[in-house]
Length: 177
Length: 177
Image (tube, rainbow over all chains, first blue to last red; front, side):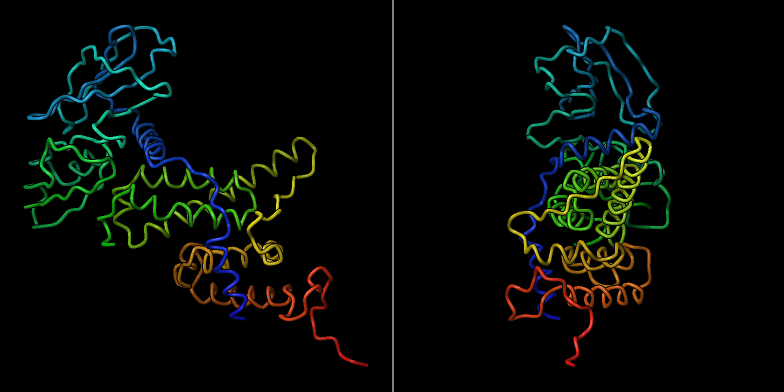
């Protein structure tokens, strides 16, 4: 019997794992699903850039702007400008200006450019929001949320602070009071 | 890892291979396994705030992935029926490094027993977790595990008699006349 258990356990190392997409691709797909589920409301403003290509720029106090490439211009998308009202509590978003960086060939949605290979996201400011709303805002941009603290329903502190860049999927801790 | 505090990228890196390997042994099809794993993890990221705060995010992603391969297998059977073809049996050719006798014995188990055995020994989950993943009680998981081990012991040759592996073996002890 133990012999069988050992042979079964050996499959953990002998069965080759089929190749899987990287974390970035999986996270991109997860974000797309989330946006689809919420009717795409998370995209706040979209503008035509330069020779084509759409970008939005998320402005957060004290942090250089980050450009989000939304559509690959090589798709032949007609130049158009769409604007949607930002959801409540969303960080302010401004219309982007031309950038020098060309979007990657397979960019279809929401590739957030960051310093590393891994996409990073700017932490929004949620202090003062209700805890549920604050969680929604954080989850919409791709963070996990940990809530701790008092009996109040409003967020009084957050860590890391608004404006820091964190890899998507990181945990943000919120304190209520 | 403290619940609610895990980083998605790290978690994905730790769990992905174990999950895809388990699904490969259960379903026998690398492509289905790979697609189901990518789908399950992207769903986890879609609602990462909630999933990361669960007692067992890993149990959650296994449950979703198993559901996903069942769905894909069902769809393939339906398509085959519509095309008036026999459903292709899942490819059960073992990868070259794997104990072929054991692979065939596991492939010959009833589905539920195969799932239980793979989750216990290949995914290395505890019996309670196996039950949670499959939506059955811990007692039912243990019982299925006992049945599966007994069946595997019957299918695999007794140690020390090389060469008899390819011959059908009686299920009960042969009695001398």
